[in-house]
Length: 266
Ligand SMILES: [Fe+2]
Image (cartoon, rainbow, N blue to C red; front, side, top):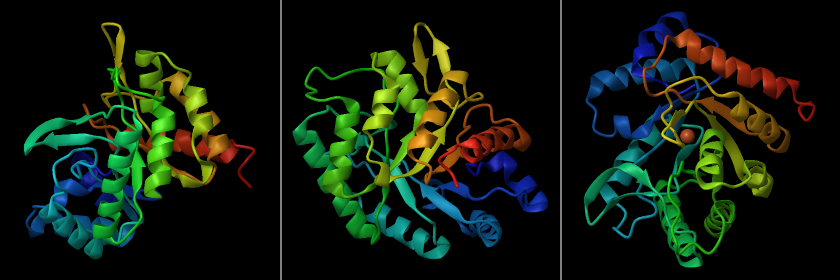
């Protein structure tokens, strides 16, 4: 499960048997000691992973040395199992978009993003997981499919992948492609984590808002993904109108039951 502030006191009191928590690394880069004391208590009971939003891996701005220095210190302190960010850009010429923005699917963009991921991995001294975006627009300049682009970047950067199954489904509906072909094209050995989340259907498009339970179509796609990536860990994201802990935990347990039922799992 993602570690979210409305659940913190329950997690620390009840210590539910969650296998691990994903921590939004960016939220702790500029914090004082009090939030860290809480996170240290969580860490003393659970493994954690770091999920980031601010590496700006697809941009042409230089990588932010201060950001990576702070993130390295955070990694040293909490020893996350892995660190992830998105295949996107979030700022240009110093101007923050406050959104995860896509790249055109070209060889040039793949080379550019991969070189930046290599630099980021060098700065952090570890291999990272890169996540696929939800998308609503397509660049006229794109020369390949989204899944060919993701695969090309992962190969060039020699990084691992965090596959967001809901994002794949949302994009397949918005941009009209076969989500199963996307899953089938991913390099099995690189997929270390999968995300599940709810989305909103609005005015003819699907919006990846992380504000509801996972829909049946995404569960079906997840079953297909589990069969292909049985080694990957799964995380349920819920960021809008966050419900009680038990509601999110029930979604995570549903995913765990699918993983256990998979005939591919010993
Ligand atoms: Fe995600």
